[in-house]
Amino acid sequence: MPPKQDDTQKILQEIQKVNSDLREEIKGIKDDLRIEMKGLKDEIMGKINEIKREQKDLSIELQGAMIKINTLVEDADKLTVKDKEFEKRITTVEEAVLMAECKATERHLRLRGIRESMNEDIYKTIVENIAKYMEMKDEEIYESLDLVYRVNSIIATKRNLPRDVVVQFTTRKLRDTILAKGYREDLIIEGNKVIILKETPRKILRKRREYKELVTFLGKDTRYRWEFPEGISFNYDSERVKITNTRQMRQFL
Image 1 (cartoon, rainbow, N blue to C red):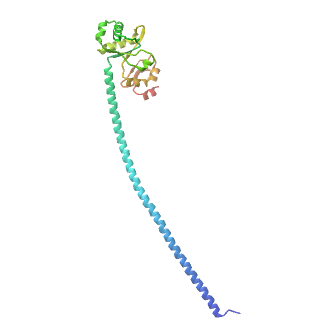
Image 2 (image 1 turned 60 degrees about the vertical axis):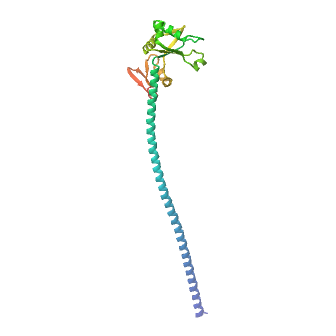
Image 3 (image 1 turned 90 degrees about the vertical axis):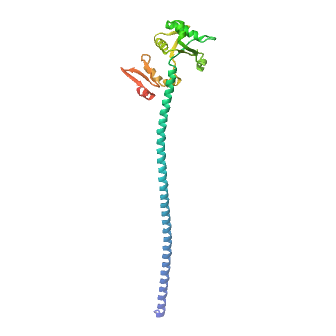
């Protein structure tokens, strides 16, 4: 039996109501979703803008840091230049002091190997033996001497060796003459061979020790000359060689 027209109409109205309710619900969901998406978008854009501001601030800070770094580098360069100038001045002063020390000792000789005894008269011993060595009179040597003394030496005392004797002459001429003769003829005092040395400032002696390897390489047959304030010159393979620092020495060796 077919449905009545009233029943059909009622069914259609219910379907329309369901559709209307469904559309309203869907519209509500869409509105909520749109609002939520907008909120999320605003939040994301806020984060992005915050990051951009932080990047901008960081960029400004970085630029400031770079400016400070460049300023520090410039200051460091200036300090380096000043430091080099200061070192140069110090070197000049040190060389002047060394030159003065060398000048002060240019009339001195150091004698090594003279037997030491209690209550010795070292002045008399030097006068008599230098006079004999140089074939001069004792009076001449007396007049040519300013000072004679033994050098205090802890090393010599520990090794039970006689301390060196420093002789200061009134002129450089006699000192140089004795020094030159020492290369040709030994000085013998009380049966012992005495080594005749120039009196050289300790700082220069320490510098010369750095060239020991080169001196050993040259051997006894090669004559060499010490340079001031440091270095050494000599003839090698028919050429005159002058070395003024240890770096040049290593390159030569």
